[in-house]
Image 1 (cartoon, one colour):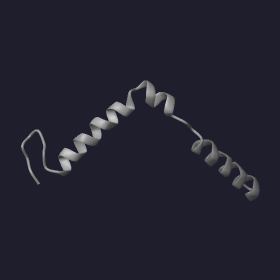
Image 2: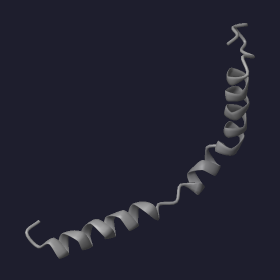
Image 3: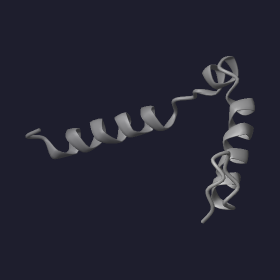
Amino acid sequence: MQDEKMFRTLVMAFRDAVAGIDFKHVWEMEKIPEMQQGMMAGIYRILSGRTDTGGGM
């Protein structure tokens, strides 16, 4: 922490490492694309007032 240049280098390396994490393999294993379609349909129903409970906005 005393060497500001080294600290900035460490922070930038950490940021780049985190930005490079790829979860695509896990998402495909967990069927995320199929779940995403269902979630988007549910969000649309909620926003348009078409819920299973019959409640409207």
